[in-house]
Image (cartoon, rainbow, N blue to C red; front, side):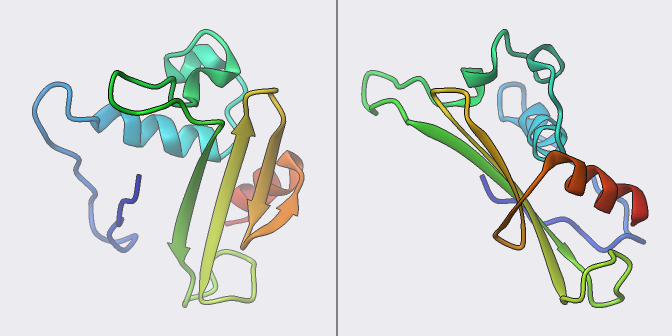
Length: 116
């Protein structure tokens, strides 16, 4: 999923018909920022975020989300014009967190968000 979010001074609205994935956007942001409870993102276990397959598509082995933020004003304490926060999980339950494609700990993501 890719979404572009407006600058901080512009309100963000997500609209669409039922079943179009509006709540998936909120869930993916919550998940990439470190949500640990599957229930909070409408799941029962951690690998519920991984595509289970369909009649026409095979199941995936992992899920990943990246949220990329404009940081030209250096509001986020990272020396880069964009900051990308990512999370991956595979079917074994192994999860990794990334800031600008560098592996980090969940603590580092939480710390970065709190300092922003």
